Image (cartoon, rainbow, N blue to C red; front, side):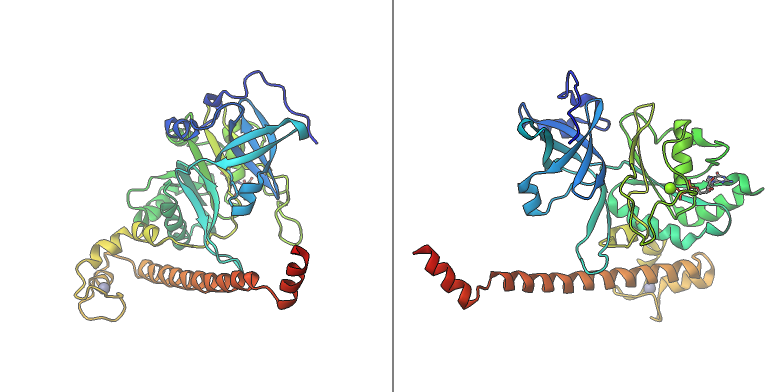
Length: 364
Ligand SMILES: Nc1nc2c(ncn2[C@@H]2O[C@H](COP(=O)(O)OP(=O)(O)O)[C@@H](O)[C@H]2O)c(=O)[nH]1
Ligand SMILES: [Mg+2]
Ligand SMILES: [Zn+2]
């Protein structure tokens, strides 16, 4: 059991990065001895929590366990110091401003929140063969759905003589989203990220493995705080090792979250995000003859017309269709999952005649 840190004023919430008036008001119902903190990482049933000036380990209260409410990286939480067992427990999760979710994965069909309270998400991509507009569209869809602001960061600009060409290519699908070319390795262009990495603001990095997320974090710190590619982050079975710190406090008071535990983001419940990411298609589609046009073979389809005229790329419309189909599949899966869950619950409620007899015998 780790000993408790000795700190003069653990209740000083103002030093928790990202703490604001909305949180202050949500927290106001809690009096001493409750304290506030922010989740920096999770290790199975243990959370690392940043409280005033220090990081502590905490478990989850029985009540939160029972309702299945699990704090995620970036969450602001309410803690209680249980002096008799020398440890902290998390008793509540304060309302989330934004939440990044991944869709249903595997058997568990519930949408999973993977990080919370992010202001800006850097969608990191790299010059060369990683540059894939379709993947950026997918990320944009998920990021828009989270409520955070997307920024596209083109890394490894040092590897090409024509970074502006790559930037222009990305701009064709980016709409109003800023596209910023940098080199995490040489630190060129990092100053252009300063607008987002500001005191009290939280930035998360998403992007495929190898694009340079950890290198960027190290560059922002001017020292190595995050392992880069050469060291495996997963064991042979593909599980995450338990020691990866995810939330970092930058020297300027900003917060940065490295790859919030997602290898492949699934779309989940991102219909709104899809509409925003494909703003141009949505706009043109208003002119389709049929209100429920699927922009496939229908007569009078304004989207197909735009493709023929060359104002929208065919690949982009294909990508829109693909993501749309994926969303439909996901929500179907979720529904089936919910039905199964209901059945299970019902089964659990049934008591076998033998059990009932035993129970009756005992209670006499
Ligand atoms: N040339 C070049 N290489 C980079 C740059 N950023 C990262 N790398 C390299 O790309 C590899 C993967 O970087 P890493 O930060 O581990 O990627 P992550 O998986 O996204 O965290 C490493 O070998 C880095 O040295 C860059 O701006 N330029
Ligand atoms: Mg990394
Ligand atoms: Zn249409």
